[in-house]
Figure 1: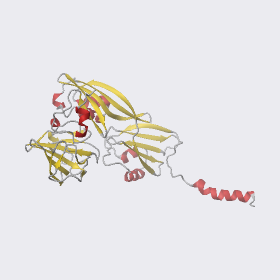
Figure 2 (figure 1 turned 135 degrees about the vertical axis):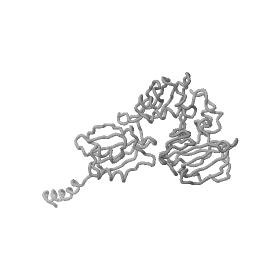
Figure 3 (figure 1 turned 45 degrees about the vertical axis):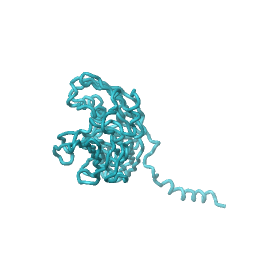
Figure 4 (figure 1 turned 90 degrees about the vertical axis):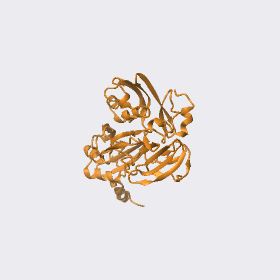
Amino acid sequence: MLKPLYLFLILVMFSKPLLAAKPDLIYDQDLKYKVKVYKVQKGDGLVAILNRHGVSNDLANKSLGTNPFDEDFRFIRGNKYMLKSAITKKAEKQFKFYCPYTKNIYVLKTNGEKVIWETRKANLDVEVAYFEGKVDGSILASISHLLDDELAAYRFMDAYQMDYKLRRQLQRNAKFSLHIEKQFDEGQFIRYGEILNTSLEIAGKIDERNFIRFPGGGAFVAKEDTHSDRVFYSPVDYIKISSMFKPRRFHPIRKRRIAHLGIDFALPQGAPIYAPAKGKVIKKGRTRGAGNYVVIEHANSYKSYYNHMFKIDDSIRVGMNIKPGDIVGQIGCTGYCTMSHLHFAVKKRGRFVDPAPLTRSYPYKQRELFEHRSIH
């Protein structure tokens, strides 16, 4: 039988390595943290943000090489990120970066020696807020100033840009209002969510729009007009416009003003693209500028064009007939492109025309939701 002294020595010998071992978890949940939300500054990238908050340059560059950001993640000036700093262990930090185009949150944890990344689905608390004002200058500048958020202002414009030339038709002091979601994480305001309804004074009349959600997307519609007489259905599930049809636009890659002969719908890579009307596929392929593209010929001398696709659907064949709602491909960023989007263009008798007044705000598969119900 072992004597008590020998038993004690054996226990100490075997327990020392266990006591000395460093835990794999580098973020201590039992510590107390202070939480603060910051805005992304002009020119910011991941390394600059981490350096600003005391993370070494070497560690920041290592985190850059291992980050899980998706193709469409951007550090956009004015967007917010969260920093949780341990009160007693200053090197212990947690950063949360919120993707503005998907529901992902990218979490970086560090103890000053190494980093761990996690990707989470956003589960943010939501409140609805109401804002109203008058146009002073442009509608974009007016709403940006009121909400201190340019992305929310662009989203407001999405409700009307398929119907109006806002820069030309809006008058000074025109009234506007909106109900919009405000999203919170750990009690901190992070960003605005979807705009639920809008009103805008145009030519002395108030035009109200409601946002109607459906699986995979949603659309703004007026109470009286659901665009049921338009030639095309929307080629996407969600109208988020990054560029309209313009005779002259500054090209972000070519760095000069050239015609932009279509509408750009900014959506995440992989989102579906639909045929907007009955027709025949007359061309598909890939070019340096358009990337993966498809051309469909329709009745009444119309042709529709789909550029920058991540992938053309396997079912698409030149010469095949296509029905409205059939899958053409997936949103991507091939060719001359800076972020994932669909460039949707239309020709009428061989000449490019503005697709906006020809296109409904909802896809074919949701037609019954919009065309056979009153919108309240």
